Length: 117
Image (cartoon, rainbow, N blue to C red; front, top):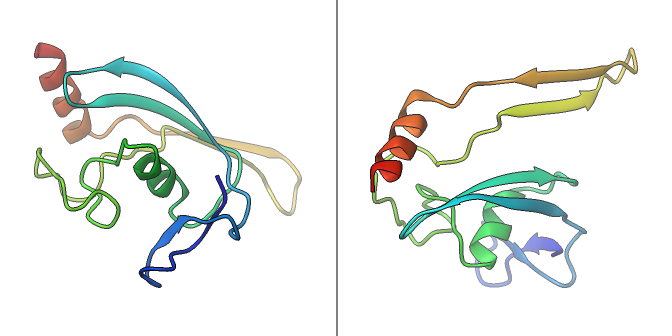
């Protein structure tokens, strides 16, 4: 879905037919009663792309005060959004660079809490 400036709030981005192409692939990892753990891969890099796309399809990011109407049932500081892997081509060497990061402890604790039901 293309993303551009929101017509309602110029400080926000939104799905906008006049916006720029934005492609987000996603896969459901696990469904819980009120939440869903999702793996996302972005093909483009638009401002707030993941947050805008997920809110648009009815799955706002927990803790996202801008696009989730302030819903934050776990009282997290920030968002339940984590980049586990980042890959890009180095602009000078042309070499592919890949970085991985473990899930933050607070995020893992919340997932474990959800797993317990």
